Amino acid sequence: MTRIVIVGGGLSGLSLAAQLAATDHRHPVVVVDDGSRPIEAMTWASWSDRPGLLDAAASRWFDRIRVHVNGRTKVLRLGGYRYRVVNGDDLAAVVRRYTGPLRHFTFQHGHVDRVEDDGVIVDGRHMRATWVFDSVIGSPEEPPVDARLVFRGWHVRSERPAFDAEIPTLFDFRTPQVHGASFVYVLPKDEHHALVEHTSFTAPDAPEDVTAQREALAGYLTEVAGTGGHEIEREEHAVLPLRSRQADRRHGNVLTIGAEGGLLKASTGFAYQRIQRDSAAIARSLYDHGHPFGLPEPPARFRLFDGVLLDVITREPAQLERAFGALFRYHTAEPALRFLDEATSAPQEWRLFAGMPAATYLAAARHRVLSS
Ligand SMILES: Cc1cc2nc3c(=O)[nH]c(=O)nc-3n(C[C@H](O)[C@H](O)[C@H](O)COP(=O)(O)OP(=O)(O)OC[C@H]3O[C@@H](n4cnc5c(N)ncnc54)[C@H](O)[C@@H]3O)c2cc1C
Image (cartoon, rainbow, N blue to C red; front, top):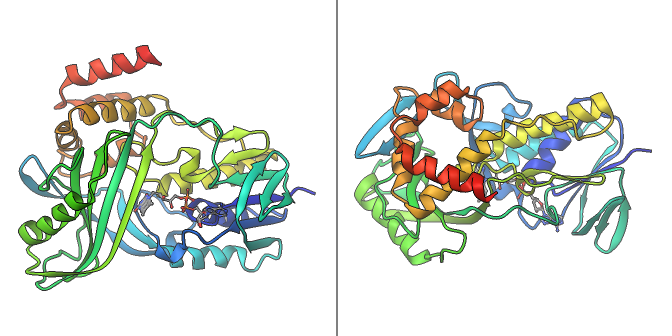
């Protein structure tokens, strides 16, 4: 009897469980999670131009974003896209709507020590599986880390009405560059509450400077947002390894999923939407072919673009503002979002790249191609 084990019940594990339930998948599915990253503590923001299975989990939708780049603030419409926010507990509740009525779905608390070809070791005991989807242990040979995305965010309450509740700020470069190309991201809740995040692309071996990040956040809140005083309700922090080269996701009957499966977009650190598409493709492949490996591959040039951008900005951090300025120079953010979604054509990409220093990027691309 076919049995599926999903290692990790975070974003990718739960998204895959929902997709399997929705594709009328009849075999037993066990999701194992040790609770080390509580889902309730997670919030994901992402953009999308199409309906998705878990859309009911989104608590907020935006049709505009704000950017501050090259000395100018601009509000951009999103065209066919919407930017939305999903809280972890809402995601879990929507996933339960799909899996709850089905007796062959089990959610088990347990720590996975190891993944093997014929199953997983959970709390020291072997659990047999035909297919393992692993969002935790990862592939034995991971591609090199090109850069790291280091972010520290404060959920703040401001004294004055400092935030625009209707428009998130995707990037604002009015902040000190802390060991790499840095900007501030603002996700508002209302006029007095927001998540304000200092985000840096750093070299893989750059030190992390917590004091400088906190000073940058405090400075932004006072000088740019104009909070007139603020209270920090919660702090979040993460360091995400960015890899532009594709991980080998398949090992025997094991497929790595989620961030471990390389679904973090190396030039943005966003993964939510990619994980949704990947989960749907895995469920479809199992249904159509009886195995989960019939997954579409986006054109390889997008990985090259990501790698080249990371090479350039880790050497010359000021180039990030220039690159974002070029990508988001239109009256709508749609062309840039479509490019970051890896859904543009080559002529559209050349138009977007105009305004970036061609010699710098071509030299980095040449170096990358020759050294691979
Ligand atoms: C703080 C933070 C904020 C982010 N915000 C965004 C965002 O806004 N938008 C976006 O697109 N991307 C965002 N990302 C990137 C990415 O979308 C998330 O990291 C996403 O949660 C990745 O999904 P995942 O399933 O790979 O990992 P996770 O969601 O982390 O799931 C892994 C699960 O495995 C469990 N686990 C861990 N070890 C074990 C073990 N040994 N045995 C059993 N279970 C185990 C954990 O409890 C967890 O539930 C963010 C990342 C971080 C860290």
